[in-house]
Length: 130
Image 1 (cartoon, rainbow, N blue to C red):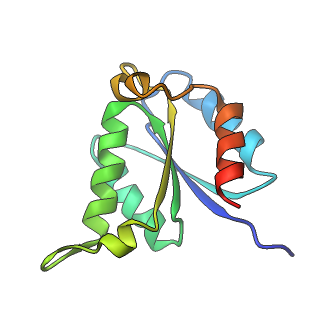
Image 2 (image 1 turned 135 degrees about the vertical axis):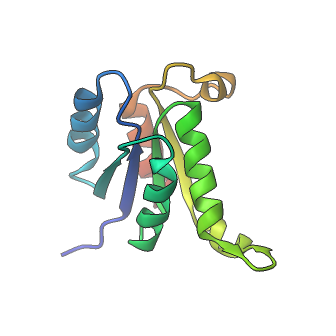
């Protein structure tokens, strides 16, 4: 059995077409990567799910949501690696983050021109995971 890169999808369950997007993630990524889909149940839950994903060995995180979901994932990463004297930047730098912008506003991803195309995301992730 070959080694498969682990990718955690942190999904805001309130997104439009949740079921369709969740299945599209599975069908697009599942053959080439070991994936796990973490689905939020309430506001702030993505922070906890991010820390759980890291604890479970996922250092490649894909945010599926909008600006609020991005904020929660970044907070989760920093909270996970908070130390008495600040943050463990060495550990934080090991975490790779990508975004599939499917939120209602998407101001951040629109500003930096991140595509909503899951196939483009797959191609980029595959390229940068080598």
